[in-house]
Length: 98
Image (cartoon, rainbow, N blue to C red; front, side, top):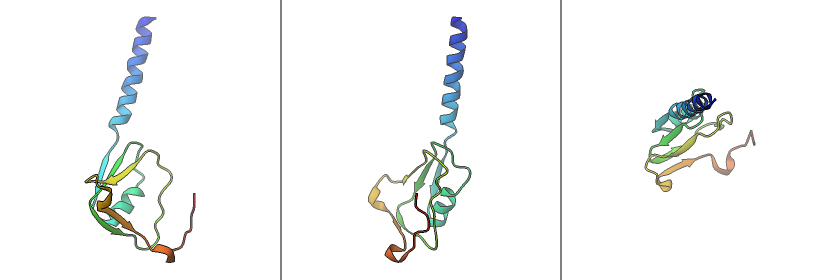
């Protein structure tokens, strides 16, 4: 019985850590790269998107996908003031709200 419990625990730990190891890190340098990465069907929970320092201007319509959980988007330098994302401002329209 103890052997079965031990084997079960080892299996659970293996599956847990194998899921963590599947996380990927993506590096983006332009808004089209950021948009394409966020819209990618390959994102999985735990993935990290690192955005290079700079100002990114959203052109046209852009909708954040809501079908992926636990994906982190952050500045590559970890300085929140170094990454600026500009939209259309008050003249832009909102087509989806969640």
